[in-house]
Length: 221
Image (cartoon, rainbow, N blue to C red):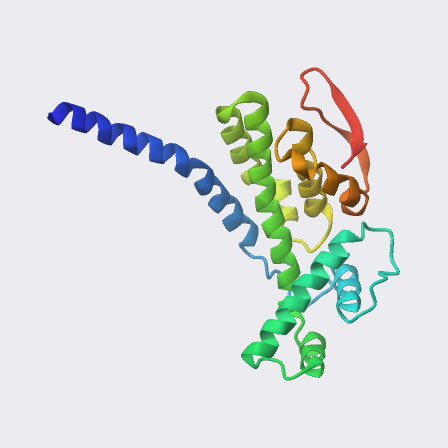
């Protein structure tokens, strides 16, 4: 009786271990991407482009839905506007803000929180990219390929570094991977959403990886 019990315990441990691999990789990815995320603040000029995204997003949150700036894809402006809107509402409920004037005062005197929220959004998207790479590689080459791909991206220097920035590099990478899922029959219902939001998510054409062996696709990512 003891031997079958030990076998069952060993199998249960292996099964749980398999299910823990991806969460542990994602935890590692997120930890690396938020470590030092407040770098340079409250100096808002230490990273180019961040102030542009913040100002456009705040203008949208204030009611002007036209970003008046189209050198970057617009969807991220609106996403940031939602984040800042939620922050304001939470501040109102908790008593941190008595009104819009308090929000404005905080932004002009101590803007660190606004910038950190935007950087955290990038860090979340960077971590989500690791999960997406796992899904794509698993669908294409199996679970082992998915785990290795996710692990490599989780510690990739450039991806970790850029996930600290309130810029569009990592969000565009995330969007590029996300909109490949319908092509691999993963969440195929996303095809309609993909058609509508792709132009606002990513704008830089380049040579990219193709899920079909031996082929390279040219597309916008």
